[in-house]
Image 1 (cartoon, rainbow, N blue to C red):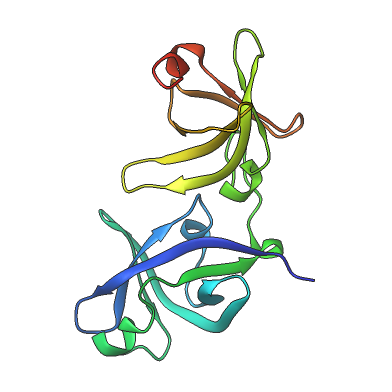
Image 2 (cartoon, rainbow, N blue to C red):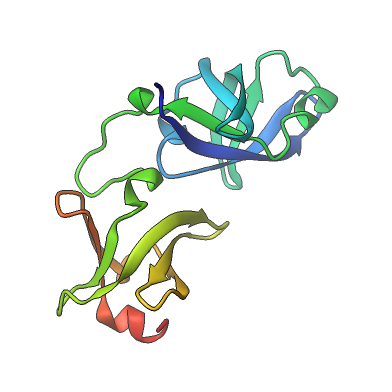
Length: 172
């Protein structure tokens, strides 16, 4: 059974020729080369196949055009849909790079004391920064920005995210 991974979400149409602004999740969308077949839909259980005909990076995220969407009205049908690929299509990553889905379920610990903080529920994709949505041991949730000086290490082998204590002082 294929495991679908969300690699982006269409925000809105752009221009008159069927282009859309797209938010990329992690590095998945950036690694695609158009034309490329993907699945789109409101969630993993309701998707349809389409082809990304054009894809480029822009200061406002990504701009793409789907095959068959030649004008703004056609592009409007893609507003707010998620873009999925099968996990097997994702390119291998180097070093400390990661896909958002890999972080879900990882334990968040402090760097110095190795004290557990909670578990990553999901990764939020905000316009200025990606952030971890973490359920603390008391059941409450916190948001931890995925930035330098905050997240020190993603340890895939031990399934944990190592976070700087000084960054946490401002959050918890």
